[in-house]
Length: 201
Image 1 (spheres, rainbow, N blue to C red):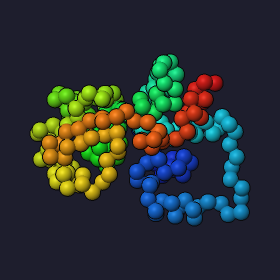
Image 2: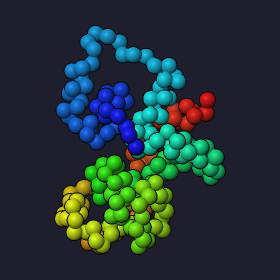
Image 3: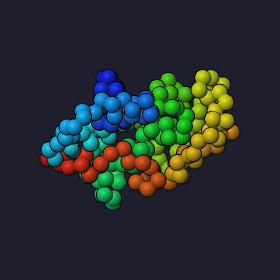
Image 4: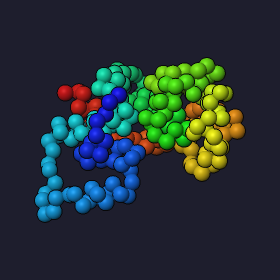
């Protein structure tokens, strides 16, 4: 999906891309802020639109993809729409691959899956949007373990903290969900209540 100039978007929505989550970008933001002027006041609709764009672009989704997730969240029974939407976004295969640390960014994770480096339950998959269930086992394809980013991954893995809702065996390069993601164990990308309100208009 073509996103556009990331630095320009991040100046409007905040540091939603990994390349803008740096001290250098924060300093540049502070220096470029208008001096002595009151921040622009957004309408309620404007605030909801910004939150929608922030969440959508954080996960790298098209308008149609994101709208489909929102529609499913609003019609699914058994949990609140906010919890359902958060879970639907976090359990995408590309996001899980990113959260496991197999890729440095979600965009890289999408490419990793699309290029066939990841298997689910022993079968190669090239669908980044595939939904990961608690019973699914995610692994690096055998032929990919000795290539590129996966070289010395076991050492890299030990240097980071794995989210509590995921499990990973660095030796076998296999893992999966140990629990379902929620607002307590997986950071929320934005105000999902505002996002749902935007689509409820």
